[in-house]
Length: 141
Image 1 (cartoon, rainbow, N blue to C red):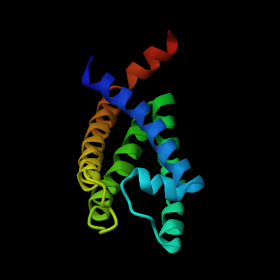
Image 2 (tube, rainbow, N blue to C red):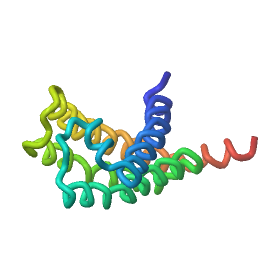
Image 3 (cartoon, helix red, strand yellow):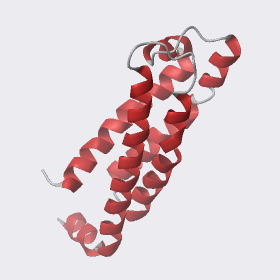
Image 4 (cartoon, rainbow, N blue to C red):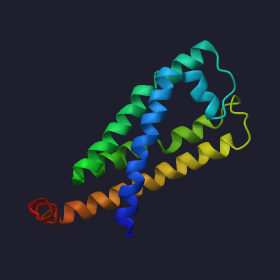
């Protein structure tokens, strides 16, 4: 498996992950926070988390567009989106409400994963931009 194939596979897994996270945040915020290792949230904390659902659903949509079209601009958009999330999860890990063992480490890992995705998708975007003839060749088959 090439690095590009691995990135595309990982991208497809992020469609499912962000769809689940966004749906969970919208429809069952308390349960979703519990799965993430968060203590019982206050009602305002629950509503704040719920407001993030559309953000993650937007991420799922961006991953889906890149998986379907695969144009350079789609991968650049994903690189940028994931780049915006690098510090977010690390910042969340400072909350005293994350008490489940491993929850904080998981959030730090999520920040590192977002960094890796941002760099990987940027590399894929550059490769796509440098070789637009590949897309035309693939479509003509």
